[in-house]
Image (cartoon, rainbow, N blue to C red; front, side):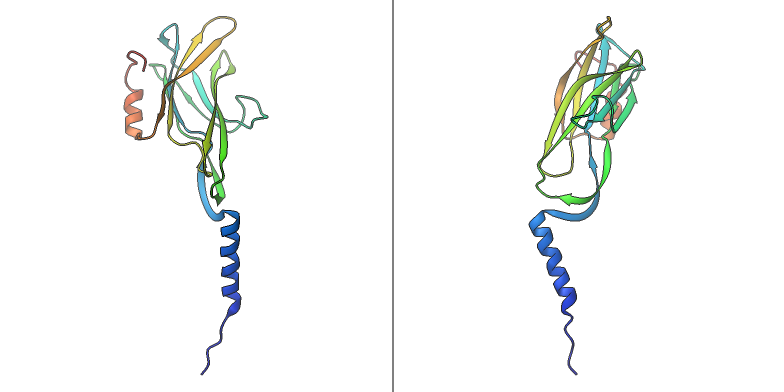
Length: 176
């Protein structure tokens, strides 16, 4: 008895391999970060500002600074906050995509959202911004509502949720 060769499935598999190899796109449902973790402290005249809303916004470069997909938290009694990353679903994994992810740190003051800092994170693929940024923001309570945020520590790569929770529960000391 002679076996039949089914060439159609082999051809289809070969076509899929060629398309994936030449385009760099792999069908792979996954979640990507649109913003990184951001932790920090909000203060005015050296005193913590509790109960203020802080938002990290994934910004379209043509859009408003504090509008768009965002994750929002409220500062604690020490004026500290930790905003988890914004995420979205992606259906294709793009290899070597070389993308920039633009995101802003915004604070709600007197029912207005103020952009305190603009960032642009670069990645080699579509994973989005990684790590955790730590910032310290000062609000000047005057008519201009001047805000300034400085990177307290450029980037945390190794962190756990329990370390973040511990940091949030401690009063600020000398620049933290």
